[in-house]
Length: 134
Image 1 (spheres, one colour):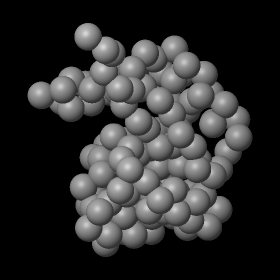
Image 2: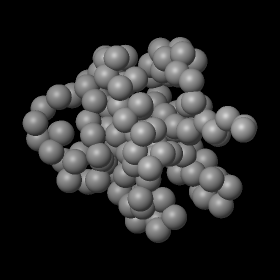
Image 3: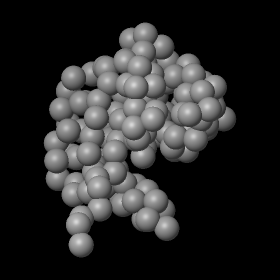
Image 4: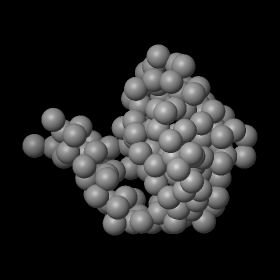
């Protein structure tokens, strides 16, 4: 029996240090493969290119990208029928209740405050994998 294909994550983040940290976390998580985009436009282009070949299983989106906000990015995703149902998690150093509420109202399934809690990330990915296996 061949192993199940790796679950795919697209991490949209412009801070190189955060990208390196996330790459290190994912290196230690079997069954997951991380892809990165450094701004919203790059993420949208990558997703459009992969729409037919297979979309990521999860998007992790920084709320403060250099070219658009995370809210603008999820708005663009939700407007495209091919991308509308992608599970998205917001990431931000801003933990104000209004920001969290706005992210959830826009369609983010969760909101993680930076610095990212690696244990929480691992648990959330395991829960995601279990949901997808059903």
